Length: 283
Length: 283
Image (cartoon, rainbow over all chains, first blue to last red; front, side, top):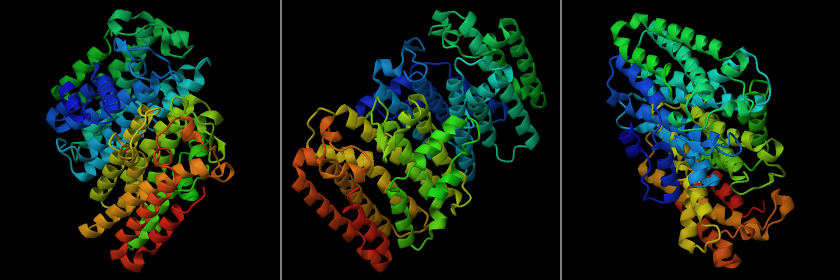
């Protein structure tokens, strides 16, 4: 992924150099690459090679990084540290961080529209663009962020928390899985629906695990401070239903995710082991 | 355009309501709609109806508005007034304004990917997405913004100013014209190149006229304060080569733009009158 992303980002010696440097700093700064991993594992489950979907995996990671860079801005979460390093607006400045996010979006769509490594017909490319644009629009990620901001300091019930998470994190996780599925023209509707169920369960479980780590995780393993949600009076699973019930919810969703993979048999081994790792991780 | 845009924006009563309201406030707040007008006039010049390209015109206006909303933020130009009304972050808040811009981008790409009113084959839609993503990326609008920020307080020469403007304003103006041209499959390369020359000249002339109005314009007609460029020590044509030489440059570019339209004969009347208006406007 590092090489695939590096090759697709504008080179740092080209003007505007500071912006290009900041984009590379933000994107190439490590990270778990969860969304590309989900896309690749889905591709392998469906008999595609990673090469065929590498450009789509890059597109999804670029929009994820854009969302992190904007979330870290002072007017949003005001975070100084990300992946163990200064956030983009700390390493550069606020205006540059704003533009980094603004520029990563069109780059992602450009990859889907024309990256030669993506082996997909025009109609498939358009469906990928559709999936991504929906996932990051107001009924997806950006909408989830908006709800998150408005509801800080308010006491949400657990259904409201889950709706917020379905948009904020769930939508892009879902798109990661479904973009791989779209690359298999003529995939049976039943199999597509199975992957959608898997992605929905895993997306929510992943977010709950993230929120649990904010309470019980180790800052040095996470590369960022913990306790941020409580400090910002955010409603999360641990703050609304407690740690034990949140862990139980992760276990339940994990089971649902694995069940959705049953029809894929042994082919789904990559997705299964990824799900196991995502929901037991400590960072 | 108001109706076309209103129909394509998320409805304000849907969640997240505050974000959707702020998007509608920003997009439907008037404005000259210069880029849609250029797209429509090009379409008419080429024998297309406005209906056929309306969705593309909306896409280009959505990205233009996103760029205004982000430019107005405190970390960028820190403007309080836009189109005679409070800017988005003043009417709402900074986080919401950030998300408004972030959400308008994917909506624009979504229109190009699937709006049913756009009569275009999949391959054409992909070319439109390509044109738009290039125009707003780091070699286009976002790159121009980055150069603008870095160079404030520095004395640019006129070639550097024109390079900055070619990216910052020119790229989206050019895309407005070329997106209409892409909607005519099999358009002769010579005619496409003529439209490209027209768009390049008009884009630069439009920006110089804008910068002239910041010096000699009437704030009440403009709906915003004048003198902002001088205050921010921005390098523009008037500040670098003076008012008279800037006006002469507009006249020269205007002539080049009209010359590029000669092969289109009377069909180009809509583009000609639009060019005449754009370069003689007082607001």
